[in-house]
Length: 345
Ligand code: SAH
Image 1 (cartoon, protein in one colour):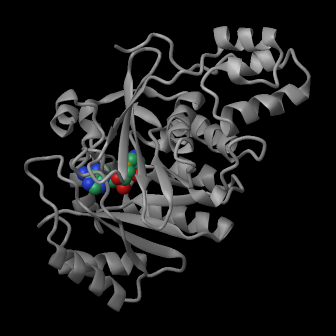
Image 2: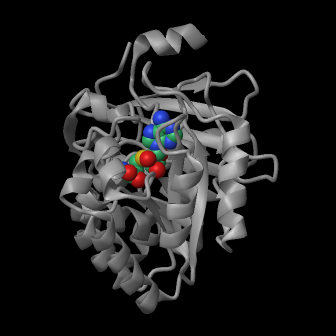
């Protein structure tokens, strides 16, 4: 059974305003470092404040974890106050990195043909603390194993740049030295390519990584799989990215999901190489995680050839490791289907 209290920190700053500043530091430590699950455990705070906080700002997270058989991926389904459910994923790499893939919206408005989240439609933007609680959920789990989150990627449900202010506030809070203290370079935001978002992001003076979901080298093809491309064509995205690089001097990753016979031809590789021949651009090839009966992942051979063509043209290419396939926790597979979960269990 799902409890009715869910994490809610909306009132936290109002309460803190009534107390001296040093309390804020103690609260941040309790919440983000000690990772307390009940304010009663915040032993540095006076009892009346702990009681008040327990009433007004509950810390319990309604999250259910599902672990993959190799134990490298944990998907969490988190139920929010209004009973809407979102998903987040923890990926443990062999090199010791613990990356959390965070949702920024419940559902998504874009309905890209290869992504399961879009099929849900759009529900609502997530609050700052609803973004943060996904991270805290996994930080609490990892703490039990004496481990920590090392990276956060905004590649879960939704479009981060359509929830811009909450996204940025969540990043700032998680980056805060007195709290969670995760370095800006350890965050990545992936966008379908919202020009206003990229422009604002360029001016934030933050060292957070930017990734663009490109997936096709021409507008004709991209519009077929990413309908919003009709509104924001490739040339407009590229021009915003170029300005971003001029301002920040930071690398930008272009994600390219490899879908069989759709965007994986040698011709596509050559066209993509032409687009990508720029300083600080690099391509991340992602093998398609099946979400649609009509689409299949490109073969390993095909991906290898595609990569070679790009590299022959001097493009830097990385390849994404596949996590959480059997859990339906891989990129674009985030939909809270009970069936899918019970299949795995
Ligand atoms: N809306 C944002 C972030 C969410 S998607 C964006 O578009 O970038 C995060 C990444 O997963 C994107 O690159 C997205 O295109 C990719 N993705 C979506 N569905 C996928 C699938 N079925 N297989 C592999 N990658 C997928």
